[in-house]
Amino acid sequence: MNNNNSKPPSTSDQFNKVYRSPIASWAWRDIRIPKELNELVETNNPKTSLEFGCGIGGFSTYMAEQGIKATGVDFSSVAIEEAKKRVANSEHKPTFLVGDVTNLEMFNDQFDVSFDIGCFHCLNEEDQQKYVSEVYRLLNPGGSHLIWALDNAPSDIKLNPDFIAKTFENGFQLVNSKVSRRRIIASHWYWIVREK
Ligand SMILES: C[S@@+](CC[C@H](N)C(=O)[O-])C[C@H]1O[C@@H](n2cnc3c(N)ncnc32)[C@H](O)[C@@H]1O
Image (cartoon, rainbow, N blue to C red; front, side, top):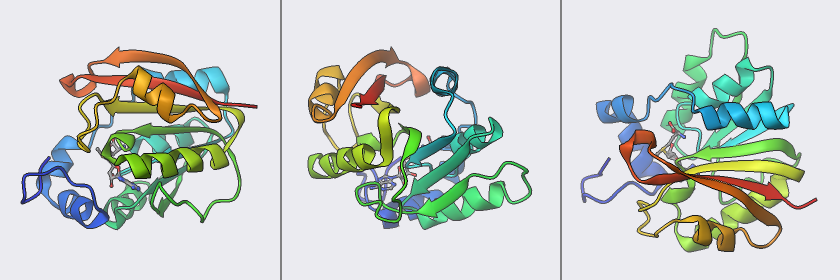
């Protein structure tokens, strides 16, 4: 998923461009719901959820279909527009908002669970720290945050359980991690719990 400079997209403009291209329709139109997301619901029985980097919104739509008050945020206005269109006639509509996961000042309320399937690995280290602060601020005490991330992040940072545990060391605990072959690329699932 490269832009013209053959670097992975990192800015909202670059992601907008990708979402306008047919390649995104193919690559990020993953409507299969990972069983890990299903488990997040079954284990936590959340009433509210917040998705970081929701893209065209398939996963938050799944959450809404489970009766959860689901919110998805992404800094690509093109993706959010499409996410809204896809649920326009649906009975269970998530709230989709344009926003940067490093500064989600539009939210004040806390959520029961949050999750991120492919966004964290787009961030540089400075933005990762801002992201961690926002997860802390917006997740209920004791709430779970689920991440799926590539090991060789597009941001060029190598992600692994030690790195994630360190990045979330203040206010969280990495309670589990699992090697994943989602999208047939080396990656992990990370289960992170906010302290009470
Ligand atoms: C690989 S895509 C995954 C999209 C979706 N989660 C999925 O799996 O279909 C990464 C998403 O993260 C979003 N993203 C990256 N950095 C972001 C940021 N700082 N704030 C908000 N969204 C961001 C991108 O716009 C993109 O939609």
